[in-house]
Image (cartoon, rainbow, N blue to C red):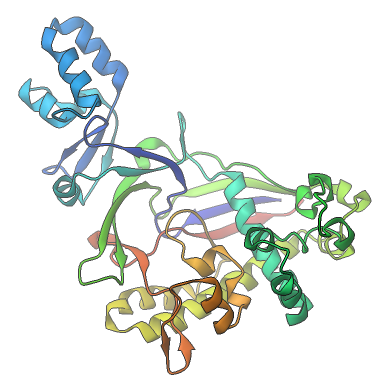
Length: 365
């Protein structure tokens, strides 16, 4: 099936890379933009300028000995925009300039930003685990939690969910061919052009009066992506649990499970936010609107909390407290966890979380 999705809030599927204000970008606070430096343009200028001191200065800068690229351009009266690979809107340019922090990057290619199929499949895997364990009842979850020979990582990735019990016994390491999720294939999405991205000022809300700041390049709201989700028909002959053989017969089941998983998470998030007090009212208002969306929703990338990245929603409060060291806050006998969340500080997206997308259309094959 082909899915068309649209970003509801900014999305940053992090590449793990960052840009440094020392050598990688220059801020223009007056124009609210950030120039990402193109090193090939800078090299051409070095070759043509005859500036003998420039190379040594750039070398010292790269080694962290002195200066930064903004000072380099200013001292030579060069316009950083002329050396930019791309310039991004950055309403938080003044704040970023004041903090001099590295900039978190989304996954990029030469064509632009995209949604990696591996990230989408990971989200679907968690949703399918949730569906299976909820469908099978508490006993199925107790079996995973009670098996002391299983690590938390194995339990999280569904060792006993997507493979036959005989293939997941203690001491055996079955190959990928025995994993039902092998037959769920997700392509990378198409691209959002680099120039459409923008820089967001984020704050980790809930620790002190001033949120811990972070700055990220993200895909803005309203951008559409297309990608393919395919169930390999060879699943029918594979040595996988009968449960998934039946499930895979209907492609529509994937969207139904996604709705079930996401709506449960949103409901719990609203319950927790309502207990956290006035500072979370803006975020709570956003989730109330999200709960009434007409399209299936899901979440990707940086900024998710524990429950949006796990099957923790199925655990009891005492089990969560045991697994998460700092899950000790209760209010009226109810667990209030987690108490911190990354939210956007920019005025046009104030108190919005990162990572939300809506499935706008599905073409079944």
